[in-house]
Image 1 (cartoon, rainbow, N blue to C red):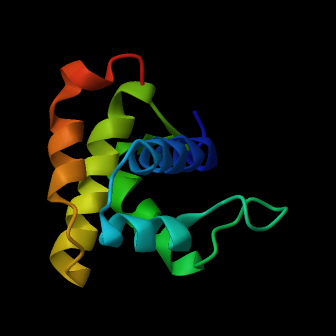
Image 2 (tube, helix red, strand yellow):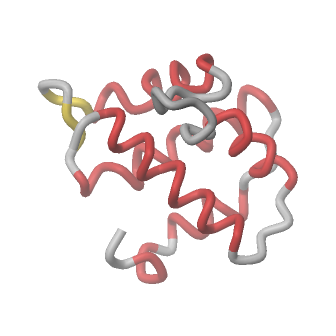
Length: 106
């Protein structure tokens, strides 16, 4: 899948997690920066967030594509980056991703 498609999958995954009852303010803030649905070109509300995403996942990219089985690991790396660098409180989301049995089919 393309990097842009993976970004949208990641955004939708996090948005779905948040909409299922998460009250995580850090995640809400991150989602507002990441939202690819605000503009018609599917670019993020904050382009720096997309650049951070790309930098975090670049090691999983081969020929401009990322394999589906690497998306959750890449997402975890992205969230850990935001937690470590910017102080976002994302432990609950990271723990959810680590429990892969709960998210089969992603």
